Amino acid sequence: MALEWRDIEESSPKKFVASPWDDEAPLAGVTSQGSCATSRPKCSKKSSSLVTLKKGDSKFGSATADNSSPDGQLRSFTDLPATLVSEILQRLDVHDLGVVSCVSSLLNSIATDHCGWKGFYCERWGSPAGVDAPAGPGFRDQRSWKELFVEREFRSKSFMGRFSIDVLHGHTEAVRAVFLLQTAKLIFTGGYDSVIRMWDMEEGLSIAVSRPLGCTIRAITADLELLVAGGTDAFLQCWRAIKGHPHLFDIAGFSVNQNPGFRLWGHEGPVTCLALDLTRIYSGSWDMSVRVWDRADCKCLKILRHEDWVWSLAPRHGTVASTAGRDAYVWDTDSGCLRIVIHNSHVGNAYSLTRSCLGDLLFTGGEDGAIHMYEIGHNCNVEDIKPSATWVPHTGAVHSLSFEFPWVVSSSTDGRVALIDVRKLLKSGRSQSPRQHSKTRFSAPDAVEAPQRMLHGFGCNLFSVDIGADRIICGGEEGVVRIWNFSQALEIAKRVEALRSVRLENRMRQRKAHIKMGGNGARSDQCSVAAKRNQLNRENTGIWHSKRGMSPCGKLKA
Image 1: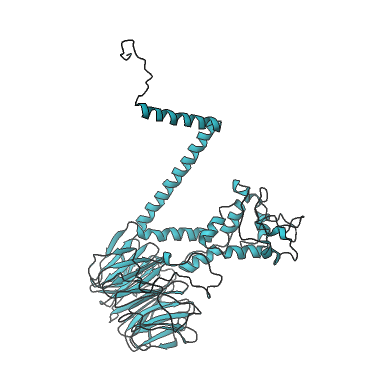
Image 2: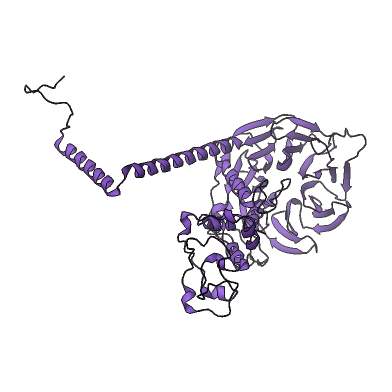
Protein backbone atom coordinates (compact mmCIF):
# COMPACT_ATOMS: atom_id res chain seq x y z
CA MET A 1 0.00 0.00 0.00
CA ALA A 2 1.17 3.48 -0.80
CA LEU A 3 0.77 4.68 2.78
CA GLU A 4 3.05 2.23 4.55
CA TRP A 5 5.52 4.96 5.36
CA ARG A 6 8.10 2.83 7.15
CA ASP A 7 8.70 0.67 4.09
CA ILE A 8 8.98 3.69 1.82
CA GLU A 9 11.41 5.39 4.13
CA GLU A 10 13.71 2.39 4.41
CA SER A 11 13.66 1.43 0.74
CA SER A 12 14.23 4.83 -0.82
CA PRO A 13 15.56 7.37 1.67
CA LYS A 14 17.14 9.50 -1.07
CA LYS A 15 13.80 9.95 -2.79
CA PHE A 16 12.57 12.59 -0.38
CA VAL A 17 14.97 15.44 -1.00
CA ALA A 18 14.16 18.82 0.45
CA SER A 19 12.94 21.27 -2.20
CA PRO A 20 12.30 25.03 -2.15
CA TRP A 21 8.67 24.17 -1.38
CA ASP A 22 9.78 22.54 1.86
CA ASP A 23 10.55 25.86 3.55
CA GLU A 24 7.01 26.43 4.69
CA ALA A 25 3.76 24.88 3.48
CA PRO A 26 0.81 25.58 5.78
CA LEU A 27 -1.98 23.06 5.48
CA ALA A 28 -5.31 24.42 6.60
CA GLY A 29 -7.93 22.34 8.28
CA VAL A 30 -5.58 20.11 10.32
CA THR A 31 -6.24 20.91 13.97
CA SER A 32 -5.10 19.40 17.20
CA GLN A 33 -8.53 17.97 18.02
CA GLY A 34 -8.54 15.67 15.02
CA SER A 35 -5.01 14.53 15.71
CA CYS A 36 -5.46 14.09 19.45
CA ALA A 37 -8.39 11.77 18.90
CA THR A 38 -6.21 9.34 17.03
CA SER A 39 -2.69 9.83 18.35
CA ARG A 40 -2.50 11.19 21.93
CA PRO A 41 -4.91 11.27 24.84
CA LYS A 42 -3.70 14.71 25.97
CA CYS A 43 -3.23 17.80 23.87
CA SER A 44 -2.54 21.42 24.68
CA LYS A 45 -4.57 24.31 23.28
CA LYS A 46 -1.50 25.82 21.71
CA SER A 47 -1.39 23.06 19.10
CA SER A 48 -4.61 24.25 17.46
CA SER A 49 -2.70 26.46 15.04
CA LEU A 50 -1.89 25.45 11.47
CA VAL A 51 0.67 22.71 11.11
CA THR A 52 3.61 23.62 8.89
CA LEU A 53 6.26 21.63 7.11
CA LYS A 54 9.68 23.01 7.98
CA LYS A 55 12.87 22.66 6.07
CA GLY A 56 14.72 19.49 6.89
CA ASP A 57 11.63 17.53 7.97
CA SER A 58 11.73 15.44 4.84
CA LYS A 59 11.63 12.12 6.63
CA PHE A 60 8.30 10.76 7.72
CA GLY A 61 9.40 9.34 11.02
CA SER A 62 10.76 12.55 12.49
CA ALA A 63 8.42 12.46 15.48
CA THR A 64 8.52 10.25 18.52
CA ALA A 65 6.58 7.06 19.00
CA ASP A 66 3.39 8.92 19.99
CA ASN A 67 3.58 11.16 16.87
CA SER A 68 4.71 14.18 18.86
CA SER A 69 7.97 16.04 19.33
CA PRO A 70 9.71 16.22 22.71
CA ASP A 71 7.95 19.53 23.50
CA GLY A 72 4.55 17.85 23.14
CA GLN A 73 3.44 19.41 19.82
CA LEU A 74 3.07 17.96 16.34
CA ARG A 75 5.89 19.07 14.06
CA SER A 76 4.36 18.47 10.61
CA PHE A 77 1.39 17.09 8.75
CA THR A 78 3.25 13.90 7.94
CA ASP A 79 3.76 13.18 11.66
CA LEU A 80 0.09 12.22 11.82
CA PRO A 81 -0.73 8.50 11.83
CA ALA A 82 -0.73 6.92 8.41
CA THR A 83 -4.41 6.00 8.70
CA LEU A 84 -5.38 9.61 9.44
CA VAL A 85 -3.25 10.94 6.56
CA SER A 86 -4.91 8.46 4.22
CA GLU A 87 -8.36 9.49 5.46
CA ILE A 88 -7.58 13.19 4.93
CA LEU A 89 -6.33 12.62 1.39
CA GLN A 90 -9.35 10.42 0.70
CA ARG A 91 -11.61 13.45 1.28
CA LEU A 92 -9.93 15.47 -1.46
CA ASP A 93 -11.11 15.70 -5.04
CA VAL A 94 -8.91 15.40 -8.11
CA HIS A 95 -7.87 19.05 -8.18
CA ASP A 96 -7.03 19.27 -4.47
CA LEU A 97 -5.07 16.02 -4.51
CA GLY A 98 -3.03 17.37 -7.43
CA VAL A 99 -2.34 20.60 -5.51
CA VAL A 100 -1.13 18.63 -2.49
CA SER A 101 1.32 16.75 -4.71
CA CYS A 102 2.92 20.09 -5.71
CA VAL A 103 3.68 21.25 -2.14
CA SER A 104 6.86 19.27 -1.51
CA SER A 105 8.72 16.22 -2.69
CA LEU A 106 7.47 14.18 0.27
CA LEU A 107 3.81 15.10 -0.26
CA ASN A 108 4.25 14.55 -3.99
CA SER A 109 5.28 10.96 -3.32
CA ILE A 110 2.46 10.45 -0.81
CA ALA A 111 -0.25 12.00 -3.01
CA THR A 112 0.95 10.32 -6.21
CA ASP A 113 0.93 6.84 -4.67
CA HIS A 114 -2.34 7.41 -2.84
CA CYS A 115 -5.09 4.89 -3.55
CA GLY A 116 -7.51 7.74 -4.24
CA TRP A 117 -6.33 7.92 -7.87
CA LYS A 118 -7.56 4.37 -8.42
CA GLY A 119 -10.94 5.40 -7.06
CA PHE A 120 -11.08 8.45 -9.33
CA TYR A 121 -10.23 6.34 -12.37
CA CYS A 122 -12.68 3.52 -11.65
CA GLU A 123 -15.50 5.93 -10.79
CA ARG A 124 -15.21 7.54 -14.21
CA TRP A 125 -14.16 4.77 -16.59
CA GLY A 126 -14.31 1.53 -14.64
CA SER A 127 -11.48 -0.96 -14.26
CA PRO A 128 -9.06 -0.87 -17.21
CA ALA A 129 -9.93 -4.19 -18.85
CA GLY A 130 -7.10 -5.73 -20.82
CA VAL A 131 -4.54 -3.39 -19.23
CA ASP A 132 -2.14 -4.38 -16.47
CA ALA A 133 -3.22 -2.42 -13.43
CA PRO A 134 -0.51 -0.69 -11.41
CA ALA A 135 0.93 -2.94 -8.73
CA GLY A 136 1.88 -0.06 -6.45
CA PRO A 137 4.89 2.11 -5.66
CA GLY A 138 8.30 0.74 -6.44
CA PHE A 139 7.36 -0.93 -9.73
CA ARG A 140 9.16 1.06 -12.38
CA ASP A 141 7.88 -0.93 -15.34
CA GLN A 142 4.25 -0.11 -14.59
CA ARG A 143 2.47 3.22 -14.57
CA SER A 144 0.82 4.52 -11.44
CA TRP A 145 -2.90 5.12 -11.13
CA LYS A 146 -2.25 8.85 -11.25
CA GLU A 147 -0.50 8.51 -14.62
CA LEU A 148 -3.36 6.41 -15.98
CA PHE A 149 -5.90 8.95 -14.73
CA VAL A 150 -4.07 11.96 -16.17
CA GLU A 151 -3.67 10.27 -19.55
CA ARG A 152 -7.34 9.27 -19.75
CA GLU A 153 -8.49 12.71 -18.65
CA PHE A 154 -6.30 14.26 -21.33
CA ARG A 155 -7.74 11.97 -23.99
CA SER A 156 -11.31 12.88 -23.03
CA LYS A 157 -10.70 16.48 -24.10
CA SER A 158 -9.96 15.47 -27.70
CA PHE A 159 -13.66 15.31 -28.64
CA MET A 160 -13.74 19.10 -28.97
CA GLY A 161 -10.85 19.09 -31.45
CA ARG A 162 -10.31 18.07 -35.05
CA PHE A 163 -11.42 14.72 -36.39
CA SER A 164 -11.31 12.57 -39.50
CA ILE A 165 -14.17 10.44 -40.84
CA ASP A 166 -13.89 6.88 -42.11
CA VAL A 167 -16.82 5.31 -43.94
CA LEU A 168 -17.03 1.49 -43.83
CA HIS A 169 -18.90 -0.17 -46.68
CA GLY A 170 -20.02 -3.77 -46.55
CA HIS A 171 -23.59 -4.03 -45.36
CA THR A 172 -26.20 -4.27 -48.07
CA GLU A 173 -29.04 -2.84 -45.97
CA ALA A 174 -29.54 -0.54 -42.99
CA VAL A 175 -27.28 -0.94 -39.96
CA ARG A 176 -29.27 -1.32 -36.74
CA ALA A 177 -26.54 -2.12 -34.18
CA VAL A 178 -22.91 -1.08 -33.67
CA PHE A 179 -20.52 -1.92 -30.83
CA LEU A 180 -16.96 -0.74 -30.18
CA LEU A 181 -14.63 -3.08 -28.27
CA GLN A 182 -11.91 -0.55 -27.50
CA THR A 183 -9.58 -2.91 -25.63
CA ALA A 184 -9.32 -5.27 -28.62
CA LYS A 185 -9.59 -2.48 -31.25
CA LEU A 186 -12.54 -4.21 -32.89
CA ILE A 187 -15.90 -2.97 -34.19
CA PHE A 188 -18.98 -5.19 -34.55
CA THR A 189 -21.98 -4.20 -36.68
CA GLY A 190 -25.26 -5.81 -37.72
CA GLY A 191 -28.52 -4.89 -39.39
CA TYR A 192 -31.23 -5.83 -41.82
CA ASP A 193 -28.93 -8.04 -43.93
CA SER A 194 -28.84 -10.56 -41.00
CA VAL A 195 -25.02 -10.85 -40.77
CA ILE A 196 -22.49 -9.74 -38.15
CA ARG A 197 -19.43 -7.93 -39.49
CA MET A 198 -16.15 -7.53 -37.62
CA TRP A 199 -13.95 -4.51 -38.48
CA ASP A 200 -10.46 -3.41 -37.54
CA MET A 201 -10.78 -0.17 -35.60
CA GLU A 202 -7.43 1.29 -36.68
CA GLU A 203 -7.41 0.33 -40.36
CA GLY A 204 -11.15 0.37 -41.00
CA LEU A 205 -10.97 -2.96 -42.85
CA SER A 206 -13.47 -5.82 -42.72
CA ILE A 207 -11.97 -8.78 -40.83
CA ALA A 208 -14.73 -11.37 -40.87
CA VAL A 209 -18.41 -11.84 -41.73
CA SER A 210 -20.72 -14.29 -40.00
CA ARG A 211 -23.08 -16.64 -41.72
CA PRO A 212 -26.60 -15.22 -42.23
CA LEU A 213 -28.57 -15.58 -39.02
CA GLY A 214 -31.93 -15.38 -40.79
CA CYS A 215 -33.24 -12.29 -38.99
CA THR A 216 -32.63 -8.59 -38.45
CA ILE A 217 -29.81 -7.94 -35.97
CA ARG A 218 -30.99 -5.31 -33.49
CA ALA A 219 -28.43 -5.56 -30.65
CA ILE A 220 -24.75 -6.48 -30.20
CA THR A 221 -22.52 -6.55 -27.12
CA ALA A 222 -19.09 -8.03 -26.42
CA ASP A 223 -16.11 -8.18 -24.10
CA LEU A 224 -12.78 -9.99 -24.29
CA GLU A 225 -14.39 -13.39 -23.66
CA LEU A 226 -17.86 -13.36 -25.21
CA LEU A 227 -19.71 -11.87 -28.21
CA VAL A 228 -23.54 -11.81 -28.17
CA ALA A 229 -25.99 -10.70 -30.88
CA GLY A 230 -29.79 -10.62 -30.80
CA GLY A 231 -32.47 -10.11 -33.41
CA THR A 232 -36.06 -10.49 -34.44
CA ASP A 233 -36.10 -14.31 -34.19
CA ALA A 234 -35.97 -14.13 -30.35
CA PHE A 235 -32.68 -16.01 -29.84
CA LEU A 236 -29.24 -14.91 -28.64
CA GLN A 237 -26.36 -15.86 -30.91
CA CYS A 238 -23.15 -16.17 -28.86
CA TRP A 239 -19.49 -16.75 -29.69
CA ARG A 240 -16.81 -17.51 -27.11
CA ALA A 241 -13.32 -16.12 -27.59
CA ILE A 242 -10.75 -18.57 -28.90
CA LYS A 243 -7.38 -18.56 -27.18
CA GLY A 244 -4.65 -17.62 -29.61
CA HIS A 245 -7.05 -16.36 -32.27
CA PRO A 246 -5.73 -13.11 -33.84
CA HIS A 247 -9.16 -11.46 -33.60
CA LEU A 248 -10.59 -13.21 -30.53
CA PHE A 249 -13.77 -14.53 -32.19
CA ASP A 250 -14.30 -16.86 -35.13
CA ILE A 251 -17.67 -15.56 -36.30
CA ALA A 252 -17.17 -16.99 -39.80
CA GLY A 253 -17.02 -20.57 -38.47
CA PHE A 254 -13.67 -21.55 -39.96
CA SER A 255 -12.45 -23.35 -36.82
CA VAL A 256 -12.50 -27.11 -37.36
CA ASN A 257 -11.68 -28.51 -33.93
CA GLN A 258 -13.58 -25.90 -31.92
CA ASN A 259 -17.23 -24.87 -31.92
CA PRO A 260 -17.30 -21.51 -30.16
CA GLY A 261 -20.81 -20.54 -31.36
CA PHE A 262 -24.05 -21.38 -29.51
CA ARG A 263 -27.59 -20.01 -29.10
CA LEU A 264 -29.78 -19.16 -26.11
CA TRP A 265 -33.56 -19.50 -26.44
CA GLY A 266 -36.21 -18.17 -24.11
CA HIS A 267 -37.64 -14.91 -25.39
CA GLU A 268 -40.97 -14.89 -27.19
CA GLY A 269 -40.37 -11.73 -29.17
CA PRO A 270 -37.61 -9.78 -30.95
CA VAL A 271 -34.50 -9.08 -28.87
CA THR A 272 -33.94 -5.31 -28.79
CA CYS A 273 -31.07 -4.78 -26.32
CA LEU A 274 -28.13 -6.68 -24.81
CA ALA A 275 -25.49 -6.13 -22.13
CA LEU A 276 -22.77 -8.05 -20.29
CA ASP A 277 -21.05 -8.01 -16.93
CA LEU A 278 -18.50 -10.39 -15.43
CA THR A 279 -20.93 -13.20 -14.64
CA ARG A 280 -24.20 -12.50 -16.47
CA ILE A 281 -25.82 -11.79 -19.82
CA TYR A 282 -28.76 -9.35 -19.96
CA SER A 283 -31.29 -9.32 -22.79
CA GLY A 284 -34.44 -7.25 -23.33
CA SER A 285 -37.24 -8.04 -25.72
CA TRP A 286 -40.57 -6.92 -27.11
CA ASP A 287 -42.10 -9.77 -25.10
CA MET A 288 -42.06 -7.19 -22.25
CA SER A 289 -39.31 -8.90 -20.24
CA VAL A 290 -35.64 -8.65 -19.35
CA ARG A 291 -33.87 -11.97 -18.92
CA VAL A 292 -30.74 -12.46 -16.80
CA TRP A 293 -28.53 -15.35 -17.97
CA ASP A 294 -25.59 -17.09 -16.30
CA ARG A 295 -22.53 -16.84 -18.52
CA ALA A 296 -20.98 -20.10 -17.35
CA ASP A 297 -24.05 -22.39 -17.36
CA CYS A 298 -25.94 -20.53 -20.13
CA LYS A 299 -29.14 -20.74 -18.09
CA CYS A 300 -31.77 -18.10 -17.40
CA LEU A 301 -31.57 -16.96 -13.77
CA LYS A 302 -34.20 -14.21 -13.57
CA ILE A 303 -37.08 -12.83 -15.64
CA LEU A 304 -37.97 -9.19 -14.98
CA ARG A 305 -41.51 -8.51 -16.20
CA HIS A 306 -42.47 -5.11 -17.61
CA GLU A 307 -45.73 -3.54 -18.72
CA ASP A 308 -44.63 -2.61 -22.23
CA TRP A 309 -42.03 -3.38 -24.89
CA VAL A 310 -38.49 -3.23 -23.54
CA TRP A 311 -36.30 -0.89 -25.60
CA SER A 312 -32.97 -0.66 -23.77
CA LEU A 313 -31.11 -1.73 -20.63
CA ALA A 314 -27.86 -1.03 -18.73
CA PRO A 315 -26.53 -3.11 -15.78
CA ARG A 316 -24.24 -1.58 -13.13
CA HIS A 317 -23.06 -2.90 -9.75
CA GLY A 318 -25.89 -5.28 -8.84
CA THR A 319 -28.66 -3.32 -10.55
CA VAL A 320 -30.03 -3.21 -14.08
CA ALA A 321 -31.86 -0.21 -15.52
CA SER A 322 -34.33 -0.61 -18.37
CA THR A 323 -36.85 1.38 -20.39
CA ALA A 324 -40.24 0.02 -21.43
CA GLY A 325 -42.82 2.18 -23.13
CA ARG A 326 -42.38 5.70 -21.74
CA ASP A 327 -41.17 4.58 -18.30
CA ALA A 328 -37.73 3.78 -16.87
CA TYR A 329 -37.01 1.12 -14.24
CA VAL A 330 -34.15 0.11 -11.94
CA TRP A 331 -34.11 -3.50 -10.73
CA ASP A 332 -32.06 -5.40 -8.15
CA THR A 333 -30.23 -8.10 -10.09
CA ASP A 334 -29.92 -10.67 -7.29
CA SER A 335 -33.42 -10.51 -5.86
CA GLY A 336 -35.28 -9.39 -8.98
CA CYS A 337 -37.09 -6.70 -6.98
CA LEU A 338 -38.03 -3.36 -8.49
CA ARG A 339 -36.21 -0.46 -6.83
CA ILE A 340 -37.12 2.65 -8.82
CA VAL A 341 -39.79 3.56 -11.35
CA ILE A 342 -39.62 6.79 -13.35
CA HIS A 343 -43.07 7.30 -14.80
CA ASN A 344 -43.57 9.20 -18.06
CA SER A 345 -39.90 9.95 -18.52
CA HIS A 346 -40.60 11.01 -22.12
CA VAL A 347 -43.46 12.05 -24.33
CA GLY A 348 -43.76 8.84 -26.29
CA ASN A 349 -41.49 5.83 -26.02
CA ALA A 350 -38.16 5.96 -24.17
CA TYR A 351 -36.03 4.32 -26.86
CA SER A 352 -32.54 4.57 -25.36
CA LEU A 353 -30.73 4.45 -22.03
CA THR A 354 -27.19 4.57 -20.69
CA ARG A 355 -25.52 4.90 -17.27
CA SER A 356 -22.29 6.06 -15.70
CA CYS A 357 -19.75 3.50 -14.52
CA LEU A 358 -20.95 3.72 -10.92
CA GLY A 359 -24.56 3.62 -12.05
CA ASP A 360 -25.52 6.75 -10.09
CA LEU A 361 -26.25 8.79 -13.25
CA LEU A 362 -28.96 7.56 -15.61
CA PHE A 363 -29.50 9.04 -19.08
CA THR A 364 -32.62 8.41 -21.17
CA GLY A 365 -33.51 9.41 -24.72
CA GLY A 366 -36.96 9.30 -26.18
CA GLU A 367 -39.35 9.79 -29.04
CA ASP A 368 -39.69 13.49 -28.19
CA GLY A 369 -36.02 14.16 -29.08
CA ALA A 370 -35.09 14.99 -25.48
CA ILE A 371 -32.33 13.56 -23.28
CA HIS A 372 -32.80 13.49 -19.50
CA MET A 373 -30.21 12.91 -16.78
CA TYR A 374 -31.38 11.39 -13.49
CA GLU A 375 -29.40 10.93 -10.30
CA ILE A 376 -30.34 7.59 -8.78
CA GLY A 377 -28.83 6.84 -5.37
CA HIS A 378 -29.44 4.20 -2.75
CA ASN A 379 -31.68 6.52 -0.77
CA CYS A 380 -33.59 8.24 -3.57
CA ASN A 381 -37.35 8.53 -3.22
CA VAL A 382 -39.06 6.29 -5.75
CA GLU A 383 -42.13 8.52 -5.66
CA ASP A 384 -40.41 11.78 -6.50
CA ILE A 385 -37.45 11.45 -8.86
CA LYS A 386 -37.00 14.24 -11.38
CA PRO A 387 -34.38 14.89 -14.04
CA SER A 388 -31.27 16.75 -12.93
CA ALA A 389 -30.74 18.13 -16.43
CA THR A 390 -32.46 18.10 -19.80
CA TRP A 391 -31.16 18.50 -23.35
CA VAL A 392 -33.17 18.74 -26.58
CA PRO A 393 -30.49 18.49 -29.27
CA HIS A 394 -32.60 16.59 -31.82
CA THR A 395 -35.74 17.19 -33.83
CA GLY A 396 -36.39 13.45 -34.17
CA ALA A 397 -36.48 10.43 -31.90
CA VAL A 398 -33.30 9.55 -29.97
CA HIS A 399 -32.65 5.92 -30.89
CA SER A 400 -29.33 5.35 -29.15
CA LEU A 401 -27.22 6.70 -26.27
CA SER A 402 -23.69 5.91 -25.12
CA PHE A 403 -21.58 7.26 -22.25
CA GLU A 404 -17.82 7.69 -21.88
CA PHE A 405 -16.99 10.10 -19.07
CA PRO A 406 -17.65 12.98 -19.38
CA TRP A 407 -19.39 12.63 -22.75
CA VAL A 408 -22.90 11.49 -23.56
CA VAL A 409 -23.31 10.82 -27.28
CA SER A 410 -26.69 10.37 -28.98
CA SER A 411 -27.99 9.48 -32.45
CA SER A 412 -31.38 10.36 -33.84
CA THR A 413 -33.72 10.01 -36.80
CA ASP A 414 -32.83 13.59 -37.76
CA GLY A 415 -29.44 12.32 -38.99
CA ARG A 416 -27.37 14.09 -36.33
CA VAL A 417 -25.04 13.00 -33.53
CA ALA A 418 -24.91 15.14 -30.37
CA LEU A 419 -22.04 15.30 -27.86
CA ILE A 420 -22.89 16.45 -24.33
CA ASP A 421 -20.32 17.22 -21.63
CA VAL A 422 -21.73 16.58 -18.15
CA ARG A 423 -18.69 17.82 -16.20
CA LYS A 424 -20.12 21.25 -15.49
CA LEU A 425 -23.24 19.66 -13.98
CA LEU A 426 -21.28 17.58 -11.49
CA LYS A 427 -20.25 18.99 -8.15
CA SER A 428 -16.56 19.27 -7.44
CA GLY A 429 -15.18 17.58 -4.35
CA ARG A 430 -16.10 14.39 -2.59
CA SER A 431 -19.09 14.02 -0.33
CA GLN A 432 -18.60 12.46 3.04
CA SER A 433 -21.13 9.82 2.10
CA PRO A 434 -22.32 9.28 -1.46
CA ARG A 435 -25.61 8.01 -0.07
CA GLN A 436 -26.40 11.27 1.72
CA HIS A 437 -25.37 14.01 -0.68
CA SER A 438 -26.32 14.88 -4.22
CA LYS A 439 -23.49 14.75 -6.74
CA THR A 440 -25.11 17.01 -9.34
CA ARG A 441 -26.11 20.65 -9.57
CA PHE A 442 -29.82 20.63 -10.21
CA SER A 443 -30.97 23.08 -12.87
CA ALA A 444 -34.32 24.83 -13.01
CA PRO A 445 -37.26 22.60 -13.92
CA ASP A 446 -37.77 24.32 -17.29
CA ALA A 447 -34.07 24.82 -18.07
CA VAL A 448 -32.72 23.14 -21.18
CA GLU A 449 -28.98 22.65 -21.48
CA ALA A 450 -27.20 23.06 -24.79
CA PRO A 451 -25.04 20.29 -26.31
CA GLN A 452 -21.32 21.00 -26.68
CA ARG A 453 -21.01 19.68 -30.24
CA MET A 454 -23.19 18.45 -33.11
CA LEU A 455 -22.09 16.15 -35.94
CA HIS A 456 -24.53 16.28 -38.82
CA GLY A 457 -24.99 16.08 -42.57
CA PHE A 458 -25.06 12.29 -42.84
CA GLY A 459 -28.56 11.53 -44.08
CA CYS A 460 -31.40 10.46 -41.82
CA ASN A 461 -32.31 7.70 -39.37
CA LEU A 462 -29.17 7.02 -37.35
CA PHE A 463 -30.13 3.95 -35.34
CA SER A 464 -27.09 3.14 -33.18
CA VAL A 465 -24.04 4.92 -31.76
CA ASP A 466 -21.12 4.01 -29.51
CA ILE A 467 -18.16 5.95 -28.09
CA GLY A 468 -14.63 4.96 -27.08
CA ALA A 469 -11.58 6.75 -25.75
CA ASP A 470 -11.04 8.76 -28.95
CA ARG A 471 -13.60 7.46 -31.47
CA ILE A 472 -17.33 7.58 -32.17
CA ILE A 473 -19.02 5.04 -34.43
CA CYS A 474 -22.52 5.23 -35.84
CA GLY A 475 -24.75 3.24 -38.18
CA GLY A 476 -28.04 4.01 -39.85
CA GLU A 477 -30.41 3.65 -42.73
CA GLU A 478 -27.74 4.32 -45.37
CA GLY A 479 -26.17 0.93 -44.73
CA VAL A 480 -22.70 2.30 -43.95
CA VAL A 481 -20.76 2.63 -40.71
CA ARG A 482 -19.10 5.96 -39.94
CA ILE A 483 -16.15 6.40 -37.61
CA TRP A 484 -15.20 9.81 -36.23
CA ASN A 485 -11.53 9.57 -35.31
CA PHE A 486 -10.39 12.21 -32.80
CA SER A 487 -6.86 10.83 -32.35
CA GLN A 488 -5.61 13.62 -34.65
CA ALA A 489 -6.87 16.17 -32.14
CA LEU A 490 -5.10 14.24 -29.42
CA GLU A 491 -1.78 14.37 -31.27
CA ILE A 492 -2.20 18.09 -31.92
CA ALA A 493 -2.97 18.70 -28.26
CA LYS A 494 0.14 16.74 -27.25
CA ARG A 495 2.32 18.84 -29.58
CA VAL A 496 0.79 22.05 -28.27
CA GLU A 497 1.42 20.94 -24.70
CA ALA A 498 5.03 20.03 -25.53
CA LEU A 499 5.61 23.44 -27.19
CA ARG A 500 4.06 25.18 -24.21
CA SER A 501 6.40 23.34 -21.85
CA VAL A 502 9.40 24.28 -24.02
CA ARG A 503 8.36 27.95 -24.06
CA LEU A 504 7.88 27.95 -20.30
CA GLU A 505 11.29 26.36 -19.78
CA ASN A 506 12.97 28.90 -22.09
CA ARG A 507 11.21 31.73 -20.30
CA MET A 508 12.49 30.50 -16.96
CA ARG A 509 16.03 30.20 -18.34
CA GLN A 510 15.89 33.73 -19.73
CA ARG A 511 14.64 35.03 -16.43
CA LYS A 512 17.43 33.32 -14.49
CA ALA A 513 20.02 34.61 -16.95
CA HIS A 514 18.64 38.13 -16.69
CA ILE A 515 18.81 38.04 -12.89
CA LYS A 516 22.33 36.64 -12.99
CA MET A 517 23.59 39.25 -15.48
CA GLY A 518 21.83 42.13 -13.74
CA GLY A 519 23.85 41.58 -10.58
CA ASN A 520 22.51 44.14 -8.19
CA GLY A 521 18.76 44.26 -8.26
CA ALA A 522 18.60 47.94 -7.32
CA ARG A 523 20.88 48.87 -10.22
CA SER A 524 18.69 47.04 -12.70
CA ASP A 525 15.66 48.85 -11.29
CA GLN A 526 17.40 52.22 -11.70
CA CYS A 527 18.28 51.40 -15.30
CA SER A 528 14.71 50.45 -16.08
CA VAL A 529 13.39 53.67 -14.50
CA ALA A 530 15.90 55.75 -16.47
CA ALA A 531 14.96 53.99 -19.69
CA LYS A 532 11.28 54.70 -19.10
CA ARG A 533 12.05 58.34 -18.29
CA ASN A 534 14.05 58.79 -21.51
CA GLN A 535 11.25 57.21 -23.48
CA LEU A 536 8.74 59.67 -22.00
CA ASN A 537 11.05 62.60 -22.81
CA ARG A 538 11.34 61.51 -26.40
CA GLU A 539 7.59 61.24 -26.72
CA ASN A 540 7.08 64.74 -25.27
CA THR A 541 9.75 66.57 -27.26
CA GLY A 542 9.46 64.59 -30.44
CA ILE A 543 13.29 64.73 -30.85
CA TRP A 544 15.35 61.58 -31.26
CA HIS A 545 19.04 61.94 -30.37
CA SER A 546 21.46 60.41 -32.82
CA LYS A 547 24.96 59.15 -32.20
CA ARG A 548 26.16 60.90 -35.32
CA GLY A 549 27.47 64.45 -34.77
CA MET A 550 26.34 67.62 -36.53
CA SER A 551 28.64 69.77 -38.62
CA PRO A 552 28.88 73.58 -38.04
CA CYS A 553 26.78 74.07 -41.20
CA GLY A 554 24.01 72.03 -39.75
CA LYS A 555 24.66 69.03 -41.97
CA LEU A 556 25.14 65.54 -40.73
CA LYS A 557 28.65 64.18 -40.81
CA ALA A 558 29.18 61.45 -43.37
